Image (cartoon, one colour):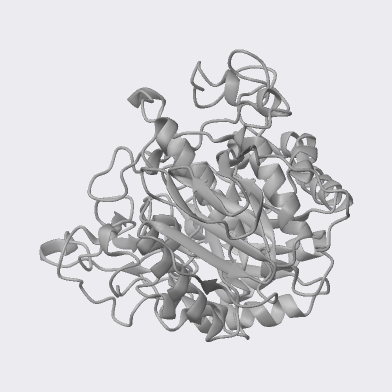
Length: 541
């Protein structure tokens, strides 16, 4: 008997609620890349009013919270991650009243709101940096940043051999000295040893907490402190070392004092406000330090994101991640895509195979204990757009070398909502990056109500995740691996089992229980089951 298990509807109300203590421990949080979510005014760029108009989609999807990428005043040299004013909304995205109304509308729908904070660097248009450039070398305003004299004759050589993550030197000469920027030259790094920096960001956090946000995603949470003396690294291609080897500009122990101070500030506010670290660390154990009881609440699990389609490696990453966070009393996060990486449909092979694997990976992720982060459009099965012409690309790394590949625009294409041709309901007219002309079938409207669609698979999975205690909750009981053939993962939790067939062929095995949801149709007679290739199935026990 073949079961079409893609869109069950449950009569009972959710057994989980975002109002519970420690809501983040098993929350599903949806990342909105504001520029590409929804446009309200026809300029082709997503904005806060556009986000607000589409909040019902997120509520129907079944997520617990929304994370918004930066919408602050910015020259947009790096998509808003170059902030000139941390307390104001850029006119491109609206104004402060739009932010306030968005938070209120989200709360009315039962959605919490997390906003980005960018503490490692400012924009070069920030008043502090303008003041620093206006004064002579050695002036007090320069102490808020990392200004240094150059090396060699006339100081023409950068102070050390550090490279920008975006490629090229991490130093630019200006005002008679060199200043450090681990990213674009328009993003000068702050000096967190200066007391005014800590005071300013404590004030910024309070400003947004007072407005009602529920927490912060901390950009480059691993980078705010640099090794004393800013020592040379002695080798190139440094961007390839991030998250694999110790580096003097990332994951220094001093960052933890900052995060402890922020945790104390968050704890002053009611309602379980949280901090989420975007942190790259060489090991799962180092990453777990960011979520010790007196530090931030969560840290992104990039090892899971970067794991290839290999069940044995996936199991290793899952085990090591759970063990590392358990050692510090925290829960694990799971994430497959974000605004900085190739979408996982494409990473897993692209085409029908990549989509099948992406659907299966989504069910695997949502079955694991802890919190899951979804990137906008993954619920639609969107692929990476890899054929953008050079003249439309806006990633600041695109024109630089030896850093990131500069192709992040491909995962930032504006979403398709409805209609048969661009802009697919994104807004009244146009999109800041061009949408493919074959995306009509991937829109929200086209997939709604289709039991075979990726959108309905996500809706069904999130509904079950809320209803079944053994799904997601880190407190429901241990994850236990069961014997399974090579290339197949099978684990159980109280009242629940999950199978992943990562092989390129159908696999037959004893039925673990009653199938309740699958990324592809499964055949079972109640005693045995034929698992389709590249699929994941949930079972009630």
